[in-house]
Each structure stands twice: as structure tokens, then as C-alpha cells.
Image (tube, rainbow, N blue to C red):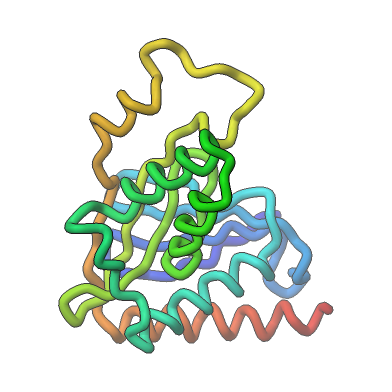
Length: 191
């Protein structure tokens, strides 16, 4: 029997963690699914991985944002974080070189989760906190199939736009962090 844990962002947005069992039976190694809900849209961000890892990533990212360590790098020059990540990831995969891999390391600070089609980021901007949901070029990770002619990376980037950009209050970030750390303490007991 699945159970739902909801981290509320506002009246129309939430991060939903779908547990494979009741919270009381949950262990650190249980796989969960995480969905970002906004109005009537759903973005699958995390699947087939452990709740322990999901909560550690979320907690670390929120803590960094609250410490105001997540201002976007100057080399973005006004470009979107997901756009820059897709570009960096494509270059890393295409070039398979050390320089491109080093340049991609910036994303580790801002990326909370990504799964196939979407990624969730957090960063500081203008004394506010921003969650951003961005599309992911689906052929970055699916090497079994070749992209169709009308599904090229260049076409994806030409029509690229973030799915959601949400400015959130400090209190909301603190509340989600507190909820996630409480749940993390609970699952850590199963280790």
C-alpha cells in the first residue's frame, strides 16, 4: 500500500514523495518516486532510487540555499540553469573529455534531482529562493536508441524553455527542510 508525503510550496504546488509502503514500515533502502506538482501539471523527478539518497540530496541543497551559497555562476550570462546544464551535459557526452567534465561540476551544487525528462534545481536570486523545473534532452541518457531526425539536440535547444520557475519564501524552504530532515532521521533508524 503506497503512502504519500507532500512538501507544500504553495496552494497549487508541491513536491510529492510516493512511498512504497506506510511511513511506519519505511526503510532507508526503499525506492520512492518524487513528483513536482504545479497546478494541473506533474513532473517526474526521481524514480527507482532510495529514499535515503533523495532526502540527503534535498536536505543538502536546501541547506546550501539557506546559507546563500547558490547564486548562479557569472558564466551563465543571463541564461537559464537547465539550458546551461543540457548544453554542458551534451558537450561532456559528445566530447568525452576532461575539460567538459570539469566544467559540468558546477551543476552538483544546484541540482536536487533529475529523472529522464525533467530536473529540479534550487538557487538564490535577488535575495529570494527559486525552484526551477527544466526539461532534460531525453537522448542524453538513452544510448540504446538513436534520436529521430526531428528530435535532434539542436532542435531541442532551439525550442528550450524552463517548465517552471518559482520564487519561494525563506519560510517555505525552512519548512520543507525541516520536514525532509525529520523524515531522514526516521529512515536513518533503519540502517
